[in-house]
Image (cartoon, rainbow, N blue to C red; front, side):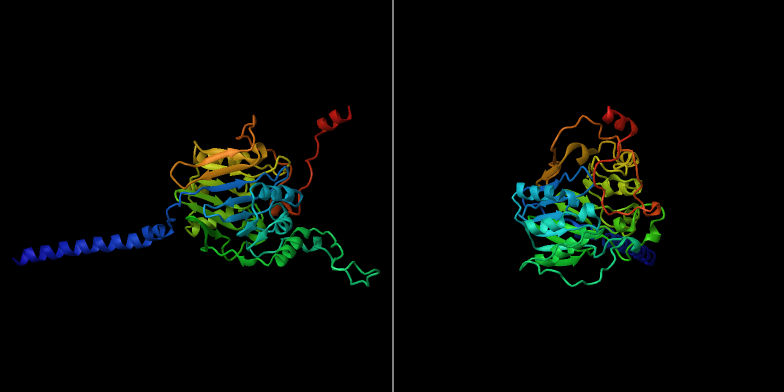
Length: 385
């Protein structure tokens, strides 16, 4: 009898250990994922427009939520602000509930001033960082001069254009907009209506410095705001110009990066979209926003190859070849529709040749990339004939 009792006690102890392990595993690994699970979709349509802000490089993404809210992520280059404003008019956007500026580079922030003028903006989110420009290139303060003539009443004299005018114009537009301002904080979730959410994944503290970019990329890009869009079974990762360093930090923080759609980081730069990161994202659809005149080899052939290696069946879209890309979904399984503004006969899986290197280690400074690339000798010869 005593022997049987001891056997029962051992069995009970084993059961308790198994239950304890199960509870620990559930609390540690399953519950966090369950808590992140988005609510059921409302049945209305979510629309994401990756705008064509070429032919120079740039990003601008308009989200129309199923709850009727509008979100703009970046505003393209200064020279392409009209394209962004025209798109807002085309989609009858009169108010932006959120305007997210991923980082202070002109191809993402340049059109912001015109956006503030065109529509009412309720909330602005950025990474809180000024442009990363060497001190010797910053505008020198000019001594105050006594004005020779009084400017017309209500008008300010035009501000002198400098290398950081795009940033000054953004700050002035933000100030005059009366929008609520916040710096991006990882873990923050924004309810954009109809069961759709935006979650901030980056940048995380401490922010990257130039010294940490010795393997390539720039600190301004590495500190991009990264957000995740969820609606039912639909998910999209919006990465700004995040670099490989950003991706690895998100992986080390166990951020939820797995997504059906990936807006490929940094226009398809070779310094982003690392193989291990893509393996974790497991995208079914990849979208690259880049310009046909860009001089930095965007998209890189290496990145295109890594995308295919991560998923041989992945669907690729590119604004440089197909113009504006629009995704629509009602948040159900397998109901994502992707439409490109134009057809192309070019091979989407062939990258571009680089004329410049967009990395801090090469002395790269991002203050604009205007105009077409230089002509080759052969093109110049043909022009002169």
